[in-house]
Image (cartoon, rainbow, N blue to C red; front, side, top):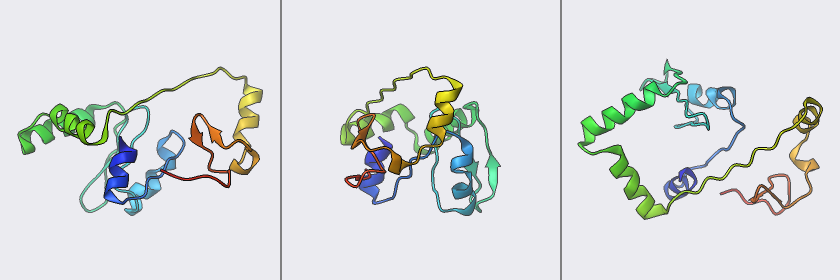
Length: 134
């Protein structure tokens, strides 16, 4: 869904590894307007750009939902249904595979240029010359 909304708005989407450390600098310096991660944690800045909270347990998202309802007079679920009507239902599929510490160490040292497949996990490989970002 974020890919689709970002494209419509003509904004650049950055996909980074899971973890606050990968996007915190962009939030702090104002180069990123929104950051989210798989764990459903959230980080919010004040209007002046200073950090307000780095809540990681979802409470801030529940408060945001309540504020959306209060200010817009609409349920956030209704707004989301409108987005799915416009952009389609999102699909998420994740396949986890166990790995040993040795395998993890090898993977951690890989660069995109070392992966010679055109697609990884059904997404185009950024290290491949045919890469096209969404």
